[in-house]
Length: 293
Image (cartoon, rainbow, N blue to C red; front, side, top):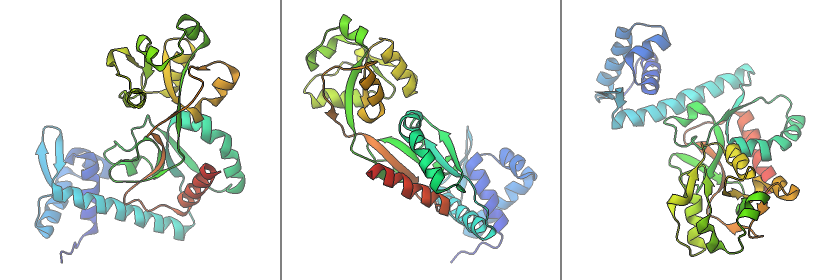
């Protein structure tokens, strides 16, 4: 069994693996570059493996380096959780959040959470569905909300509810483009913020051919997509749970008067290896209970 005799080498390795640079790691740790190199070399000699290779972008972890990095990250975070617990220090729970989910679903419910848990601090980190794509998502947040198919690697994913989709446009757009059949969408401008997968699924489910030339990409911010739809720039496909208010007030029109099944949904995602703090566990349980309700 390999034994590491110097925990400092592990800490240096963790910083180098995150920053992928001896220089940046030295600056972060406030030590010399030669000291950083010494610790990495010492660790490699003790383990008898190469942990990094050089490329144009700096340092890249080897396959062994990636394995060690995942365990070191998990171990150091677990140690920090233990230190916080015995010291009585409650660090804010870092939650990766989708802006529309936050404003439309979470915000109206947060008051009840803080009434019940006044001592728990939450730090929300906005992302445009990029949480799972980050190289080290646990550096960004302990847990978060994702939209998709639930097939993210290195994540524990729990679907929050079965979503329905609705095709909407503004009243003005509907007057200019009177539509009654799904097939007539071929003449419309389709707005989206992703890689068109939601529209592709909708067309396939309705036995229609999808034309990518129709789709107009809105910068990855659903509120911008929503305002563009309200302003009559085209037709959008939204999760029904997020735009009920616009439909009830008539700002947007449900073009076909119905909702559509989808494979997509909102998920609670937790990066593998993350040891949730007590506060994070309390928030997770509350969130899931709200979704069941």
